[in-house]
Amino acid sequence: MNTKYSNQFKENLKRKTVYTLLYILLGILVIICLIPFVMVLMNATRSGVSIQKNGLSLIPGGYFMDNWETLKQFTDIKRGFINSMFISISVTILSGYFSALTAYGFYTYNFKANKLLFGFIVLFMMVPSQLAFLGFYEWMSILGFVDTFIPLIIPAIASVGTVFFLRQYASGTVSKEIIDSARIDGASELYTFHKIGIPLMMPGISTMSIFTFIGSWNNYLGARIILNSPEKFTLPLQLANLKGSKVWFENQGPLYLGLFVSIFPIVIIFIIFSKFLVESIAAGAVKG
Image 1 (tube, rainbow, N blue to C red):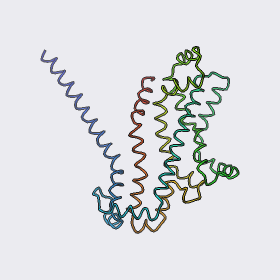
Image 2: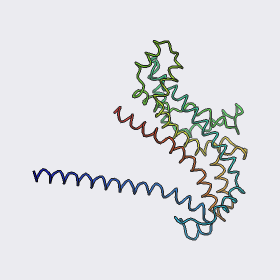
Image 3: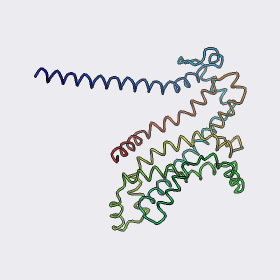
C-alpha cells in the first residue's frame, strides 16, 4: 500500500511540476508578446527628446496631450480612422458572406467542374497578390475607379484563402443530411444557406473575419497605389505621411501615439471574436 501511495504521490508531483513549468513558459510568452504594445503606449506619452536620449522605456511620460495635438496638426487622424474603419468593415462583411456562400456551394453541390474550380482556388492561393498590382491599377484606371474606395472593397469579395478555409470547415460542421431534409421540406437554397449553413459555419466565418479585418486595416500598399486625395487616405497612409514629415526628427511621440491608435481597433476586434476562434480550432480538432 505504501508503495502504491508513493507512486501516486510521485505521479501527482510530476504532473504538477510539468503543468507549473508550462504555465511559467506560457506566462513568459505572454509577457514577450505584450511588451511591444506596452512600449508603444508608453512612448506615446513621452517626448521625442526622451525617446532619443533614453531609448525605449516602460515608464510613462507626461506628453500625451502634446503628442496628440502634434498628431492632429500634421495628420487628419480622425478622417484616416473613419476611412480605414469603413473600408475594413465593408471588406470583412462582403468577404465573409460571399466567401461562405461560395464555400457552401462547393461543399453542397456535386457539379462536374467542382474539383477543377476548387483546384484553381488552391492554385491562386500560391500566387502573390503583388504580382497583379500593375494590371489591377491599369484596369481600375480604365474603369475610372482610381482614387475611390471601390478597388479596396469590391475585389475582397473574391477571397480565395477564405473560400478554401470555409470549404474545409463546412465539410466538418455542416451535415448534408440536414440540408437534404430542408430541401425535402420545401426550403429554398438561399433560405437553407441563411438558416442552416451560416449558423453552422459562423465560428469559421468569424475566425476568417478577424484576419480579413486585420489585413484590410493594415493594407498600405493597395491604398498607396489607388488613393491620391489626402481626404481619402486610410490610417496607414496618414501615419506614413507623419513619418515622412519633420515630426519624425523633432518628436517621435506623436508617431507612437498614431501607432497605438492604429493598433487599438485590431485588439478590440480580436477580443470580441476570440471565442469564435477557439470554437473554430476546437471544431477542427474534433474533426481530426
